Amino acid sequence: MQVEESRVVSRRARWTGRVLSGLAVLFLVLDSVLKVLRLPAALDASAELGYSSDATFGLGVVLLACLVLFVVPRTAPLGAVLLTGYLGGAVATHVRFGSPVFSIVFPLLLGALLWGGLALRDTRTRALLWR
Image (tube, rainbow, N blue to C red; front, side, top):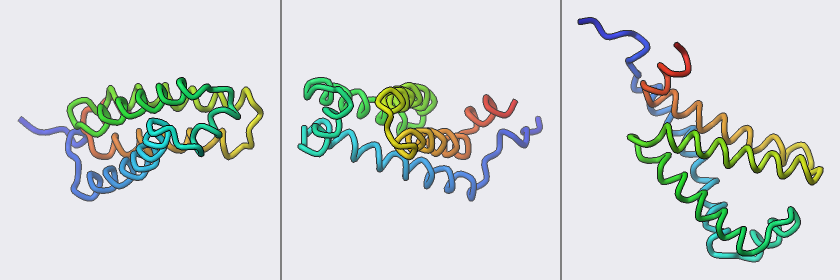
């Protein structure tokens, strides 16, 4: 039985995927920890966008849970889908409040890093996306 070329992930692709995913995960972990610890910077930024302190804490917990799913290889695709929804909410919030373009584009870039990194390191995701 011959293995399809799309099912083989080179070492270079796997490491590139890990680096891309890692960059996005590091930023999102920082964001979620700031929210969960209810640090003033996170609370102030969230309040400007209409979120209460309790909502900010809840968003931080949800983000951490999604990140845990994303970093575990077996559940990474589910984590990516959930993080896509979370980041979509961020985009919608920034559009609603008329935030600068960078604030709207940044969550899109994070999503691209997450999915690109996952596709490079996970054969199941690669097969799903490039069938």
